[in-house]
Image 1 (cartoon, one colour):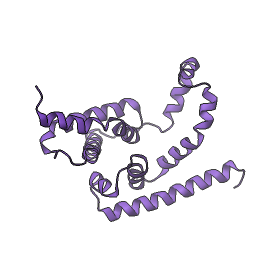
Image 2 (cartoon, one colour):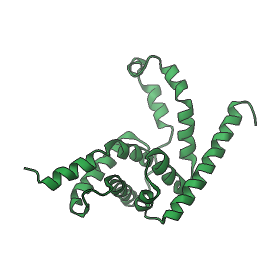
Image 3 (cartoon, rainbow, N blue to C red):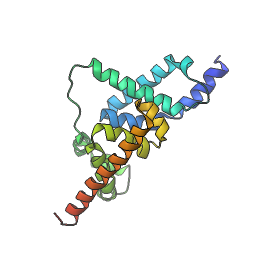
Image 4 (cartoon, rainbow, N blue to C red):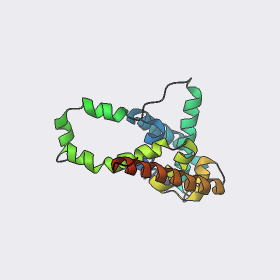
Length: 185
């Protein structure tokens, strides 16, 4: 029988699965590695359960564990090439179109609807890593500046600065895209 503390702990940490997977995709760049990272994060969280204070910010605690797990994994691996950002396009090209139709009425319509999202995602991927992490944790994952400071182990002033500068870079990247799309130079 589970203890009351264990039940509360599980309830607090299991609700963050989707957000963790989204951040893991950002870190790993492919689904299999992202799933492995989420699994390792939860395994490490279970091992560290006694260090967690019930009722505190479980999301920030889990994201810190995930980031540290990811960094430790990178340190252990000897220079393995990172996945290419466009691998998902190649994967879609190999998939059967009938499989894609199960997810929506027409893949081409869905593709057009997602163009802006893809441009934003591509612009985020083009950000330098120090800005990318803070922008994703704030604007995609919805963490507060204080939580981001905890997750990345940096001062809150640095978080503010990186988010501000990262957003400026994004704005410029997206403005460049708009100019190209509108036929400008």
